[in-house]
Length: 257
Length: 103
Image (cartoon, rainbow over all chains, first blue to last red; front, top):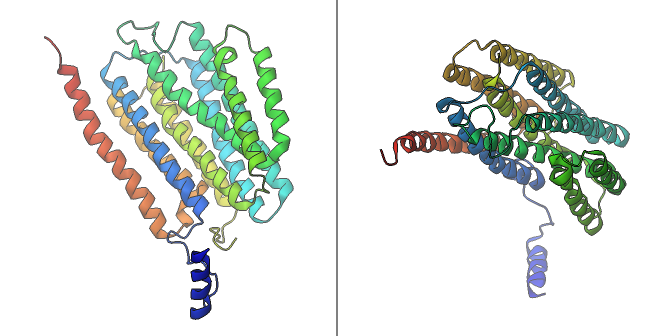
């Protein structure tokens, strides 16, 4: 209370209003915070990509990705690039206070992101069906780390994409997204074959996301504005950016001709 | 919204950037699938193309091109410096590890 009195007196004495200084970096704090987080996350992926690139060049690295895998990965890349475009359009819509088209473009972005996850999941299932595991490489016994590096790198990225889709769903639909996410989690669990990695482990990421989203939406309910859409867009573009490195280094450097 | 980075730009340029990214992806796929270069050279070429694509995404889609110069340079220089440090520590150490151990 003494501090508040001092502040009040100081304001009265000096005649200054409660104005904020212009931000140092010219952006609001949420945006600066997200940029700082993305800078740190880029180092995580940078370290994984360095390790993968080094292994690729200096080991007897297998080349298991045939025409179907490359076509699949190219379609996945096109999905992410298109999702970035729809995300930009969502930010434009939010800045002109068009709630309908903000939601529509965000849902389109989520659609492309979901398509990416499904295609990637199918790729993983195909590779696991051929005997590839995080600890095993069926194409070259001398390079067992191929499975581990591949699944770690692409798994980290897939996790980021999944979190991004949930994030965008919360921004676009708020509490209406919770039953949709719950349906995706439970439906996915029963529809995915029981011997699949995604049935046993992967789908439960949606369950964790549901819990976190519920806590956030009920503890801090708010009407998300253009700032929130822009900040969520930064995260989404980052996810796309990381794939721009993963796709050529993992898939294109290991094509089976 | 006074501190939202606003500028007179049309949506058209974003569609051009998207098109350029798709074209660059097509070039990468062609190079990779045809195995035009041997692995080390291929890695270098693909990395250069990836850096160009990421510059387009960071500059236009993430709007960094239109932010205040201080923020732009702070982010770019700090992250680039971290990657350079990583490179100069990682690769020499990785080269040494190959030759360590009982012979």
